[in-house]
Length: 404
Ligand code: OVM
Image (cartoon, rainbow, N blue to C red; front, side, top):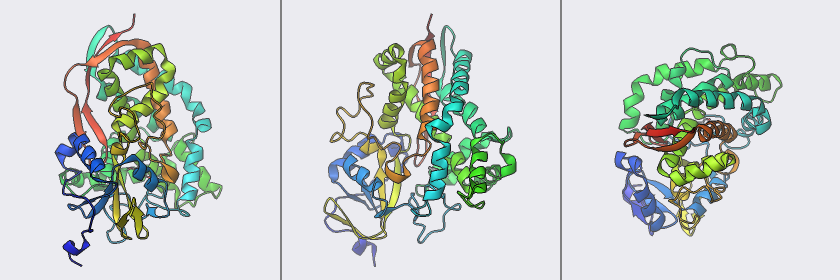
């Protein structure tokens, strides 16, 4: 079939490139355009269907039978294209194969299992904030806080050894770029793919992981027969791929939100127990993970539009999280709203299995900051770091005044 014949009849089309630099830098205008164009829009540039309204994104996320993940959740269709690495047993799998790995990680990352980390992480956050904040001072909140904090606590919790941890963020950056097209962002890191993958894969071995960490918990689950021993290293790999960049840029989103909304910062200072809801609101407002794809397992009708079997569907989580049909005043970062129902962590059977870890990191850091910081404001233009999937940062200059 020719391209022209494949192009669906009667659907709104867009020739925009969601992975172009200007769009990644400022996605809101495209989001607005796609939501307005209709419930399903055909993207001619990549021959994929796109959904950007909350209703359709939520519906696709919760219908794993018709919107599968096993053909890949990036642009590449694993039915026809070789994945860049062995597929994730969680993210890029469907039931029933998805279920055992999911159950194992869910138990290890559930709130009761994280309780032993809470005190340590709160102390680590206080000490980090003490190091950075004194009197009136300017610093880069991205590098000094959002990036530093997860790197201080998460690799230790997994049980990684001390060497090579500087590979974690570049590996995650590469993995999240790989969900998009093979554009300049992918090519820029291509020369490191072998080296970074080799390091990450080596850290997944049982002998590399401390006995009291989450990684060892995955191997113990294999000993119990909850997983095969062949699956264990790939499940550890999921922790290392999905657990670092996501929280770094999620925390950056929260810090950016507060630096630009002084009245919300005062509210958090008065009621530090809002730290968790503040983090979820920041995840809604910025959507650190902007997009994921699904693949139609059958001809699917979405709001009357036919999406043929085998089609890739691009879900705009960031657009759904600011859909005015779902949210009042969606562009406002507002601690008084209930952000639950946002799709920043996904929804349904693949919903972020590490979300309790992320919330605990955020709660620890924001609580420590709320105690020590009276005022936080921008001290220069924030810099984005461009990534095909992550709404990410390079720097976030702030001026803070320590509380008396
Ligand atoms: C994984 C994974 C899960 C979620 C996101 C992600 C790179 C990876 O299981 O490896 O992004």
